[in-house]
Length: 173
Image (cartoon, rainbow, N blue to C red; front, side, top):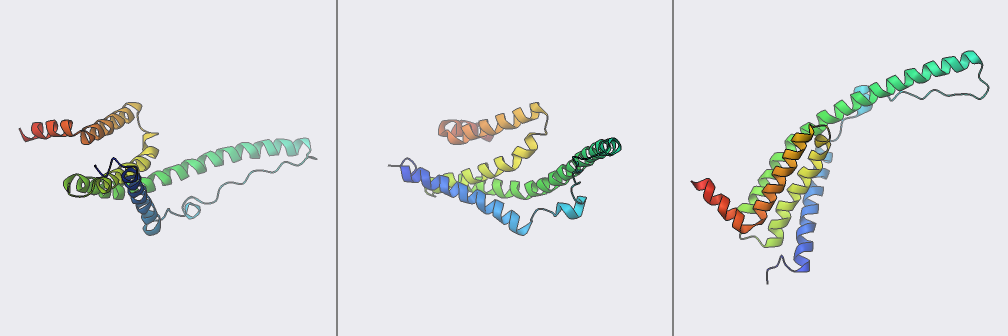
């Protein structure tokens, strides 16, 4: 009986994949924490306070300060999103090679037990998925489709022995 087909083999593979992902995320947070956005872009604008006993001039001034607050808040969050994107891009540059190396190792060392191989392959897939999701929201929809389709096809080919053999043969020609 294949150790992956048992209930415990699947749980073990899933556990390895999850802890691989957690290790990468916690390691990144430990050795390359998020920047202090308050130092980079300043404090978030404060909301103007409205009093019940305001005169007409005070209400007009309040409306003006409220519009100013909304503009400042939009600018603040735009700067914060820009800084967050820069940070996430640098982290992705670190994540991608590590994940690809472990995925290669999972395919290369066939003598490892199947649950361990699947966990070593699944962890990087989960990690890359979580790191790529923020970028896929801001990318052209056709590019999102192509990325999702290519990953889907690679996973189908990698998981089906007959397709794997077929594509190995084509690559050798």
